[in-house]
Image 1 (tube, helix red, strand yellow):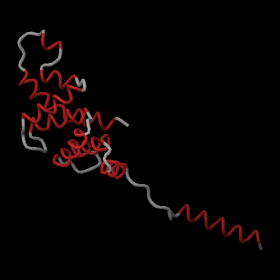
Image 2 (tube, helix red, strand yellow; image 1 turned 60 degrees about the horizontal axis):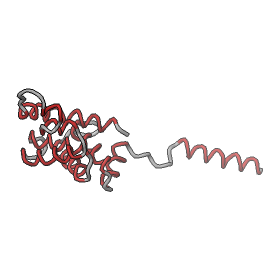
Image 3 (cartoon, one colour; image 1 turned 135 degrees about the vertical axis):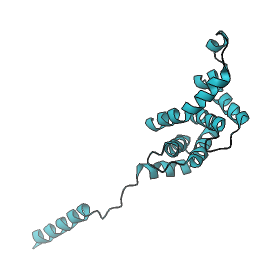
Image 4 (cartoon, helix red, strand yellow; image 1 turned 30 degrees about the vertical axis):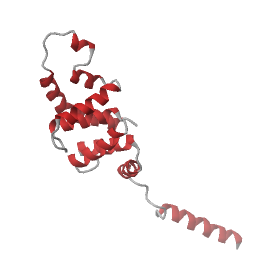
Length: 156
């Protein structure tokens, strides 16, 4: 009789595990969202990158700008470069060259070479022949958001 009861208990436990009585694990996007909402700059940048690229969520440039800006305000250098380029282009935010320059300067102060080049603050640019920083800045502003967003998504 005791063996029969043990067998029933074991079978019941096994069925509980197999039938999925346990709670479902949250999706990667849900985990990132929750971590971002708790103020983690890396998660905020990642969530912004997801919205910018439409990776795992519907593409939304305004949501992207909100999350990227939160990360940038906490000193996340890649987010600072992305939000600068977004301000340069008016991508998800109102076009504002002065604000873009401020963000490029913050990123440059942290040693970001792309920002330094855009601002003409790198040693190579100073010794080179005549160069159109405005044309380079506009070109960079088109490429940076996507490239940096992909880079952020690839980091752990």
